[in-house]
Image 1 (cartoon, rainbow, N blue to C red):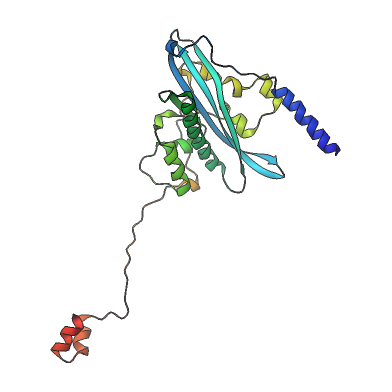
Image 2: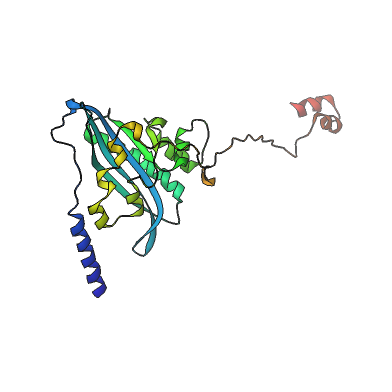
Length: 258
């Protein structure tokens, strides 16, 4: 009973701290007519940092979305728009698959947000810290296992490979969802609500793609196309020479061959 009371007090304390946090919204004096550009930025990340829930250990992955606006006088403003985190059992999936699943979730959230905004022409930019995911998205000819190919097909619907960008783990705000974040750092200073600093700058100052790419994991290895020929052999099948030795007359030979 004491443990339950202590856990309840701890939960209420954290909830009170979270209620104090605030995030930047889009300026009210901005109108769509005065905006030069409107972008949706999706950050996806996954981690093997374990989370304990109901005596079971889970891995985490998450996606966070920001709305970036640039006015006609080149004023940049970023606003927190949407965030989502999920838990998965540790025994069923690896971190590489979690990264790919997080990227698929980002594409799914993009469709939902654009339907709510009623703006299909809004530019979408996706960020991930997995070079393996970027290699698979940019691939156009190789074949991957079923788990990978199914999710790549969902990602490629209506998207271009150049919409995906690389971001390090320290700069990725979705790292807060994949690794977890307590109430105090969330309220004090967190790029989860304020967006990364580089997003408030021009595109030339965004993180660049790494020069050296890591090798694909074994579970993402490309399937090689192999051709097999099947020959069905019938043991009771006889050749024409056998028919000549077994049949004594020409009339019976014609019936046997026919």
